[in-house]
Length: 606
Image 1 (cartoon, rainbow, N blue to C red):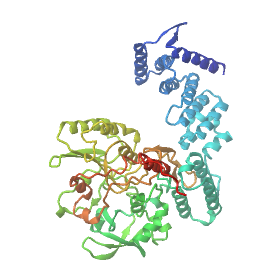
Image 2: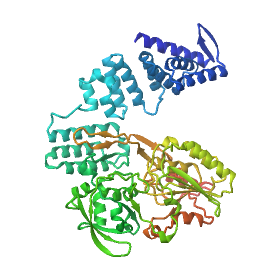
Image 3: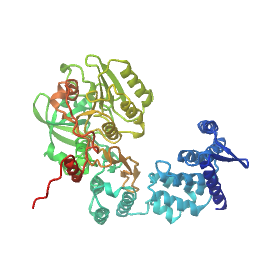
Image 4: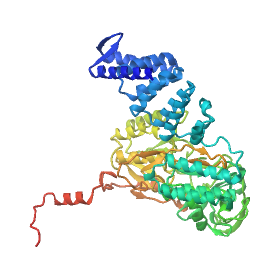
C-alpha cells in the first residue's frame, strides 16, 4: 500500500505541474513543448505496436507524466505493464483508468486488476476485485470460471458464488435444473437494465421460483421451452435463451421459409424438396400456419413485432420446438399442407435433417441448397444479386444512382470497411451521381464500432446528403448494429427511408455474450449495453419508413423490387414533418407557448 500511496502522491504533483505547463524530469521542472509530447507519444505507440512491452511501459510512463488526464494513455500504460509481467505497476495504472472512467467496460478493468493480484498471489485483493468486476457487470462468466489466473480461488466460496458450481456431477436432474435457473436469475438481475425490460425483478423472481418448484413435472424439452418463453418476456432482442447443441434440436426441416404479405412461402430447400420451391405453406400437420406462427411467437426474443416476421419463419424449422408446442406428433416426419407454385393444394411429409440446423446467416441459403428462381421473369433484382457479400455497390447510369447493399456490419478480409467507404465516396464525388441508395434490409448487425467512417462520409457529402439524394431501404431484419446504423443515418442526415419498419428500436439494449447453463447446456445471453443511437427522448418501437412497402410474393416471383422502383420513380416530395425524431418533441406547454408568441394578451373572460 505504501508504494501505491507514493505512486498517487507523485501523480497528484505531476497533475498540478502539468496544469501550470510544467513537467518534472530528473529533479527539475520545465515547460512542455508540443513537439516533446508528440515525440513521446509516437515512441510509445511504436513500442506497443512492436510488442516491446517493457520499453512500451517506460514510454507510456513518460506520456502520462506529460498528460495525466487522458484515460486512453493510462490504459496503454496499464496494458504495457501487464503484458510485460510487471503486475505491481499495472495495478495502479488500471486503477487510474477506472478513476478517469476509461475503457468501454469498466468491469474488464476491474477483472484485469483481479488477475494481477491473483498472479501476485494476493488472494484477498484478487477476490475483492473479482467481486467488483462482477458487480460492474463482467460479461464472460465462463472465461472467469476457467481462467487459470484464479487457481488460488478455486475452492473459495466467494469464487463459486460468482461463477457458479464448477461441475454438477453430484446433483440430481431436478437439482441440476434448479441450479441452472438460479444462475440464470443471477445473471439477469446482475446485467439487465431494469428500466428497459418488460418484466420487473419481482415478476422475474416469482416466475423462476414457480418454474423451479414445478421442474419435476416437466420434461427437459418442456423446461427448455419455458426458459425460452421467460427470456422472451423480457422484451429485449438480445436477451435470449437458445436450445442446447444436441441432436434433438439439430433436427430441422431442410426448407427456408419467408413470410410475405400473402403468407408463408418456401424460398429455398434441399434439392430433394426443390419441387416445393415457391409453395405456400398452409399448415403444419393439423395446425394452420397462422396458428403455428402464433404458437411460436412467445418463444421469440424481440424488440418489436417486426422481428417476429423474421424469427418465426426461422424457428418453424425446428421440429423439437414444434413437438414441444404440440403442433406435430413426430419430430422426424413432419406433414405439411402446401399450395405449390402451380396452385395445386397437397400434403407432403418432410424428413427432419440435422445437416443444416442453423441457416440464420447463410446468404441467400446454405451451400448445396437451391432457391426459388423464376427464370422466365428475367434477371434477379439487385437486392437478391449478391446477398453473401458484406458490402458492395453498383452504379446505375440511366438514373445516375449508386446502389450500395450493406448486408453485415462486419469487416471483409479482402477490403476493410473504411477502405470500402473511401472507395465508394470517391466514386460518388468523381461521377455523375444524383442518388445514393443504402440497402439495409438483410443486415442483422455486427460491430457498431465499424460505422463511423460511413456516417462521417454521409454527413460530409452534400452532393447526396440532401432530401431526394439519399435513401435507405430498411426492413424486418434490420437489427442490432444495422439498427444503430439506421438510427445514426436518420439522426444525422437527410435520408428518406423506404421499405418496412426495422426489427430494432432506435434506442435499445444490445450486445450478446453467451454463457452456458451448467446442467441443461442452454445458451443464454443478457443484453448489457444500452445503445442510445437516436435522441434520448426517442421511444419509438422501430424506425418507420416514410414510404412503406411490404414484401409480396407476387413481386418476388416476378423478380421485382418495389422498394427500389419507388425510389427510382420518386418525384420531388417533402417528407419533412419535424427535422428528425427528437427535434420535433415538444411538451404541450411548449406548444402552447409557441402558439402564444406574437399574440397580444386578451382580457380573461368573467
